[in-house]
Length: 214
Length: 85
Image (cartoon, rainbow over all chains, first blue to last red; front, top):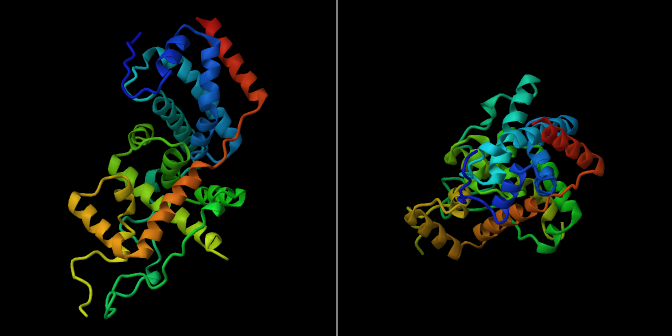
C-alpha cells in the first residue's frame, strides 16, 4: 500500500482515505455524501442519459474502493475520483458511439466569442473595434432567481461536449484548473480555451433574459 | 482631439482576454494594458463583471441530493467489496 502524502489534499481527506483503507463503512458514506452528486454530474457530461450516468458512477465507486490502496495523494482525492469517473464515462460513451469523438474542440479556435456585429467595424473613423452595442449591467438580485439558475443549467447543456466538461468541472463543481487538466487529461492551454468559449456562450445565452427591465 | 492610440487594445480584443485575465495567465504587459482599458471603458467593465456573474450563477446550479435508495445500493456495493477480501 502506498504512503499518502498531504500534497493537494483537502482537510480531513487523508483521514477519510486511511479509514476507507481500513474498510470503514462510515468513511465510505462520508465520501458518498461529499462526492456522489458531483460524480453523477461529471458522468452526465459524457453520456447522455441519467440512467447510464448512474451506472457509470456505480462502477466508478467500485473502482475507487479497489484503487484506494494505490491512491498516492499527489492529486487531490476529488480530482483522482473525477478522473476515474471521466475515464469510465468517456469509454462508455465511445462504446455506445454516442459522444462525439475528441473532435470536440468543435469551434475553430480564434473565432470570436462575442458577436462581431456588436463592435464598430475596423474602418470606423473614431472607435474601430469598440462596442457599438454594449452589454447592459445585470442586477445581482436577478442572478439569484431560480429561473436564472435553471436557464444557466440549460445553457451549459447546449454547449459542445468538451466545453461542457470543462465548465461543469470548473464553475459548477469548483475544481481548480490543475484538477480539471488531471481529470480530463487536457493541457492547461486547451482547458483555458474551452473554458473561455464556454463562459462566453453561457453569458451570451443569459444576456437577453437579464437585461434590466427586459 | 486625437483618436485612440493605435497600440491600445480594442474592446473586441479585450473580450477575448477576460479568461486569461481572470486565470492570471496574462503577461504583465498585457495585464497592464487590459487594466488601463478598463479604467476608461465602462462597457468592458460591465462585460467582465457579467463573466464573473456567469461563473457565480454556474456555481449555484443545483445540488441534487440523491435518493435513499441509491445510498442503499452503494452501501451494498461497499459491503460486497468488504466481504470479498
